[in-house]
Amino acid sequence: MSHLLEVRNLKKYFPVKGGFFRRTVGHLKAVDDVSFNIPKGHTFGLVGESGCGKSTLGRAILRLHEPTGGDIRLDGTDISRLNAKQLVAHRRDMQIIFQDPYASLSPRRTVMQTLLEPLEIHAMGTPESRKKKVLNLLDIVGMRPNVLHRYPHEFSGGQRQRIGIARALTLDPKFIVADEAVSALDVSVQSQVLNLIARLQRELGISFLFISHDLAVVQHISHEIGVMYLGKLVEVASSTDLYKEPRHPYTKALLSAIPMPDPDAREKRMILQGDVPSPLNPPSGCPFRTRCPEAMEVCAQGMPELKNIKAEGTPHQVACHLY
Ligand code: SF4
Image (tube, rainbow, N blue to C red; front, side, top):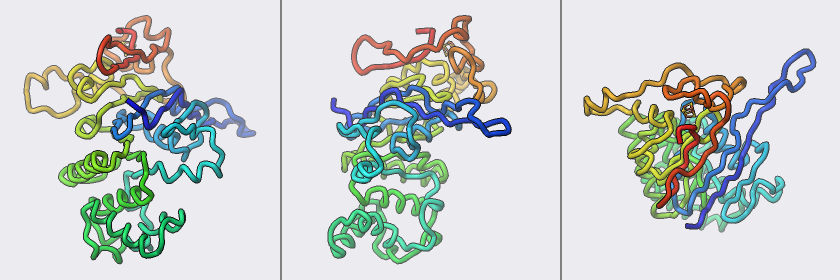
């Protein structure tokens, strides 16, 4: 299977300043040695609690945050090594959909102006063909042409997110990072936007990195899922394997937090105790050991490597001393 995105040993550390001279006294390791692939036309779901580094990872891949180390290959091009000028040509291949479309859409621009802007900046087509493209984009995201001259405040949250998605599609990207793209929406609107993203992925063959704190949301849309904890991937598997046979204790805890109608299943729930430790002062060894019900002595000593535990079929990777 050919990969559209290949991420190898990606790191994003933020310097921590302290003392009278504001010297660097340490580093916050928001993303620490993360590797994974996204096949062409697949959606990779990235889950974890707030503060685990998933949004930073998405932004580092797009180089909205400059990575501290590692490689990012998009459709064969090593974009981690490109200078700012070289990067401009590749920007159109990779786009982002934000959590809050209201904050990311200019309140002074109409829908038409918002959607035309990227096409004009990249000098794509003629004025006529650009307008045609904008109408086509509205059709793709299920909006009527009569919204073209309206402003963001005139729309509901779901409609604004559709405009945000249309804007992400203007330059025909190969890869889109959807960062908590449905988290701010009501549940009924969430499923409409999720269905739209799934349709775009199927019909346009776009690869998505779908970031969410909600494993139930990610399940419906992803081919593969990565579970992140304190800047590291702790489990990566196909969506089916992850839900049928979660292996990492953290994944099991996230899954058991999903509401279930079956009372037996509810009884077997594993409740996560405490908060995510500070990434400024992570625990030694396995970062999950302070909350893990299965922690052993060895867990404090060494960080478990992410390794494949499946002999056949699609890989299932886990970073845990139990395996
Ligand atoms: Fe729990 Fe140890 Fe596995 Fe970490 S390595 S998840 S502490 S059992």
